[in-house]
Length: 419
Ligand code: FES
Ligand code: FE
Image (cartoon, rainbow, N blue to C red; front, side):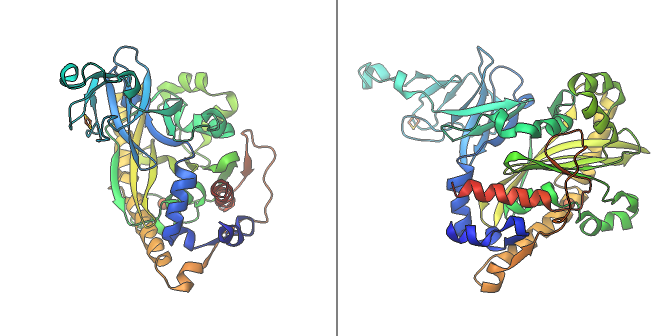
């Protein structure tokens, strides 16, 4: 930790490469960050009916998120049988009022109560402590349908953890009722998780080059790569890049009355003017609203992705595609097409980025002193002043090409893990 404090110097634009490549970093992050902070688990639209459940990962531990079959309350449980520790549910999703353990058949109601034990009267003489053997509940909370969980026994409330960032989150995911389409898509890459989080929170600069081939192929006009826009971060290391202006309203127009109900006037004005929104909720949930031309019209697509660390040089990328629930079927289909073409696992932008993430990880790994102790340069925009007249909260720069958000992200990261 002392070495980290000495060598990670975000305010000077200095981030050493070992924070992306040293296996010790993975252990420190697991103990001090991932088991302590709020992490994204699911969207409520993934478990709409009573009895619906999904199994998800919370800091590398499996949990069941389930909607009570009698009371409709969403609960989280450690996915471990309280008899002898078997993983209770091995399906990704489904609908069940009860979960029966595959080892000895203990059965739990989906409110966590132990309700059935094979032969219990005979073999435990009716004396088994049912009440003390319920599933272990996991703390969860939600904002605008986004469910987060934490292992922290005494966390900052979710609403405070998100804080002023909610103003922007509302534009991205709260502007109207959103729903997840299909199960989340998952893939594993040999890359360190922070590179993804960092890319989305602060790196508008790379689009011109990394994704340049798309413009050269004529699939987007090269003028699309503009530094015009804003970069904003709020307390706790959350941040967004907002591309403006939008030549064409890229959201379903029939939902404008809904946007106006859910957003204040300043938020709605900004939404009407936004070309794309790319950001990260600390530590590892990135959000993306991007626009693509489909059949002559600009269509937005909305997705979130989780950069789930597996080891220092490997992560699982989990992507949820969201669509406006009340939009027309035709609009939904075009939005899906726009997503698949760009940022789905097979999308052209996604594949460009994962190549970069894996190569940076490879360069930062291993034992060569130069590769481990190399300092990345994060000085872009360091001498510019934030703007004061932006309608939204946080520290705002009127330019997407700055690394202010990354510096704030690493500052918060360092403060968090040295606690
Ligand atoms: Fe689950 Fe025994 S471990 S019933
Ligand atoms: Fe990219």
